[in-house]
Image 1 (cartoon, helix red, strand yellow):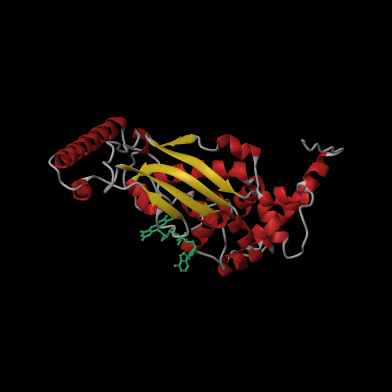
Image 2 (tube, rainbow, N blue to C red):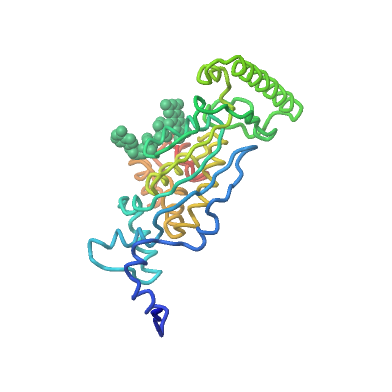
Length: 298
Ligand SMILES: Cc1cc2nc3c(=O)[nH]c(=O)nc-3n(C[C@H](O)[C@H](O)[C@H](O)COP(=O)(O)OP(=O)(O)OC[C@H]3O[C@@H](n4cnc5c(N)ncnc54)[C@H](O)[C@@H]3O)c2cc1C
C-alpha cells in the first residue's frame, strides 16, 4: 500500500524531511558540472568527482554552538562573511572536494607541497606512461626576468618561441622513444621511466577541504605562482563557486583580492589621512604604493 504525503507549503516538505536535508547537501548547480572535464593547458584537465557539503553545511556547522538552524539567505551570507573575516576557519573544513586532475609532472610537484590534500596518483611502476607531454604556447614563453618569480610582460618573439617549441618536442620524442625501447627490451617500468622529462603528464585524485583549498588558491592564484599552476587554480575556483557561492564570494573579497599592511604601513596611512607627511621613504614607500596600485601582496 503506497503512502501519500500532502504538503501545502514547500517549507512543509523541507521541515518533514529535515533530517534528510541536514544530512546531505545537494547543490543543483554543482550537480551539473560533476564528472565533466574542464580543459587546462594543452592536454590537462580538472574534473570535479564529488563534493561533500555546501554553504549550508558551513552555516549548520557554525550554528551548532547556538543550536540554531538555517535562517534567511542574507543572514547566512553575513554569517559566512563574518567567519571568514574573523578567521573562524573550522566550519569551512566541513566542506570537502574530490578532483581528478591531469597535469604535467613539474606542476604536480608544486601541487603536492600542499600537505593538507589527500591524493592518489597514477603509477609509472604499474602502468606504461602515455606519450603525453606539455608544450607551452607561444604566448607563454617568456624570457627570464630580474624578479625570478615574475614573468616578463613582453614574451619572446614568435619565431624564437616556435623554435623552442620544436626543440621541446624533439627532446620529448627522443626520451619517449628511449623509454618505449627499454620497456620492449623487458626493463622494469620503474627504471625505464627515469629519463622521462618533467613535462610528461600525470593524473591523480585529490581531496581537499574548503579551508585549505582557500589557502591553496590564495597562494596559487597570486601572480608569483607559476602561470601553468594559476591556470589550474582558476578552473578550481570556478568549480567550487558552483558548490558554495557565498563562501567563495566572501573569500574573493576578504582574502583573495585583499592585501595586508604591516604596522609601519598602517601608521603611515593614518598620518597621510590626517594630512601629515608620509614617513615611509625609498623601498618601503615603493612597496606601499605598489600594493595599492596592483593589489599584490609584497
Ligand atoms: C610562489 C611560490 C613559490 C614557492 N617556492 C618554493 C621553493 O622555492 N621551494 C620550496 O620548497 N617550496 C616553495 N613553495 C612551496 C611553499 O613553501 C609551501 O610549501 C606550499 O605553498 C604549501 O603551502 P602550505 O604549507 O601553506 O600548504 P599545506 O601543506 O596544505 O598546509 C596548509 C596549512 O596547514 C599547516 N600544516 C600543514 N602540514 C603541517 C604540519 N605537518 N605541521 C604543522 N602544520 C602543518 C601549514 O602550516 C598551513 O598553514 C612555493 C610556493 C609558492 C606559492
